Amino acid sequence: MRCVYAPLRDPREGIGVTLEEHFEHVGRLVLAAKNLVLYVDEVDMLCSPSALKAKNSSYWSRPENQQRMPVLEEILNRGRHSGIAGIFISRVPAQVHGLIRSQASEMRIFRSTEGNVLSYFRQRDEALAQLLPTLGDFEYALWQDGKTPVRAGGRR
Image (cartoon, rainbow, N blue to C red):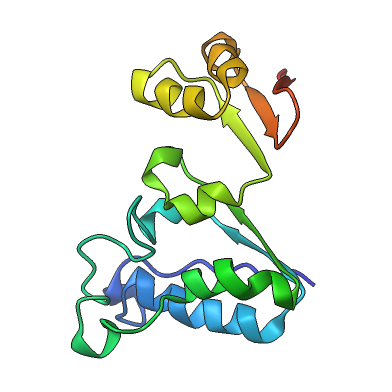
């Protein structure tokens, strides 16, 4: 079975709730369903480097939500006990919370020559940082924990 959920971006198009509120409900369903792979695109919209809550969120600034743990944090900390694996996608890994990055066992990173991105990856793996600017169109660096990064992809 495959289920794809994409929240409505404009409250005029449907339910007038924030992205964070949508994800809270979806996350509760994920925790209840168990034994699945959760794909989250643009995960940096749900967290920041320092918090598992989105910056400037009207949802998280509500008094009733200020003391609660975000479902993203619950999934990251306890999901493995329920057979939940995650694939998190972001354009800039440094904008993603450290708990997500620290649990990564594999990353696929496309070409980058931007200094901050290279600096971030240099801290993790020098060989990876050297590989990133040399990648061609549709190529990516495949980084796996404990292995040497390799060039992959290509041709279209």
